[in-house]
Image (cartoon, rainbow, N blue to C red):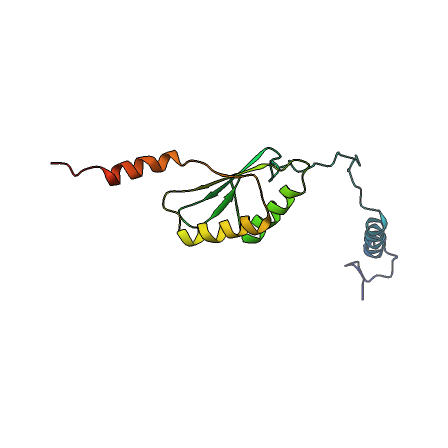
Length: 151
């Protein structure tokens, strides 16, 4: 039988079988690729760390405004808070060198129960600089209520 399609006349084959050489070359190529470390094109730079923007402090050392909204929220200097935070803020104001003024302003249709509860918290905290603001808007309500009926 002849190998690689040669004649069966007993002459030696003139062409070389390269299949085993190619197999060895492919195995070596795969081993070489596996052993090469992954090339990284990163440049390590120490970047500055971003600091989050500082919010306006919740407690003003001069005056703090407490608003009771019509929908039942307690708003301290424009930020909605709960009863526990209100008490904490009031206690922090008492620890300041000069106690800031607390301005209390319920909106016209705020619930009376909420107003009574907040006033009890304020009274219990020991705040001394306390005042009602915005009462002039209620003068218009009382004028309208006491006005004689239109003819």
